[in-house]
Length: 294
Ligand SMILES: [Zn+2]
Image (cartoon, protein in one colour):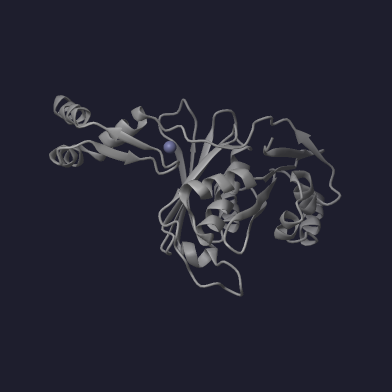
């Protein structure tokens, strides 16, 4: 079973999550029909989201919306504390030239903003934080957000290994956060360990597991594992009700246009590709409900 692994140091000044996310990244890329550039960007992003979500509390969800001016357009991923994740990308087949032989995620995203949306079931509106994309490589942007919003210095490494034809060979990542009050000794020990770390892509290529990924960055610092028994899975909770609600949110004019076309509408869920058929009679009912509201 794939899951996010959670760790903490003896003195509780360091907490960390690590994960091998290969199956969910593969599934997401298959559903979204990504080319290599989007696979790399979305794979990193969703891995970052699952690492962040596992540091939250029950039922909480974190969404990361990368809104750059590059050819990928928007990239959105979300993950829950319980290990469910999903994502979409505006332009899954976008391409940019390789940079030094590597896929250039930064050019794919371009410059722009990262919105981080944190929601929990009993809150009316989610908490949204926004930072500029400082590198557009995804990992650094998440670290920048954590530092700006939570004042938490962190180390984050995200990796996706693609085959020459763009299939996801392996994906995974590590997020290490320094908690408030961490002493200079803790910080310098962690910095020294991070400085000696091998490239994450090398470890992923060798088939390393979550504990090896963590130890690559924490070195000899003793780390304990916290319980987190949730299976990591690609999961979309879309339903006909949610689709109808999203149609209502398009507004009266838009629904009027759909009715004027005089036929059933097919609405595709952007996360999972499932298509919902909304019959004309139902569209008319939705349109009528606007009139009763006003
Ligand atoms: Zn769906």
